[in-house]
Image (cartoon, rainbow, N blue to C red; front, side, top):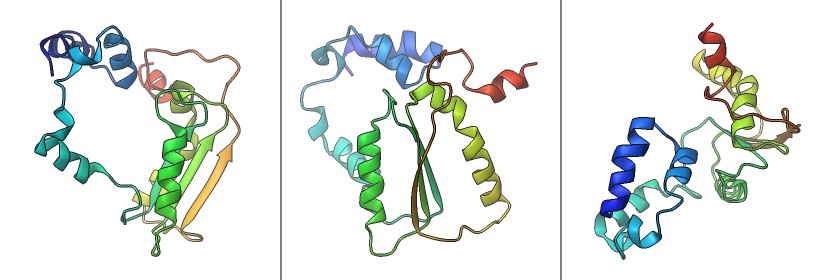
Length: 163
């Protein structure tokens, strides 16, 4: 990191415990040359990290549930869908379920997905075996897509837990 980006990271983002949307806001006025040193991505450690973290089309041990909002401005649905398709085209497939919430952006999606995600996780933790096709893709109608409010809390569970 360059001095300015390090200062923004340590003195703004870390104290906020911010995530990607927070980072997008606090780094909005930082130019690329103030963000990182030129050529950082050619460093051997960065290359090693890229090799380790690149999972497109690689075998994995399932089951895996991938949830996304169709109108997500934070996570690229096009790239995520492409990655899922590449993974599903592997000769030996593990169980992978890819669910897209129609017309739903990042934060409304976070509020909507517990209805699908929590039962799925509960079933896996209780030993229920996934049966059927190895790769399943589906679309769920949007959740409160006309009016959405970004709140301080991540989802309804946090709100209810604080009552």
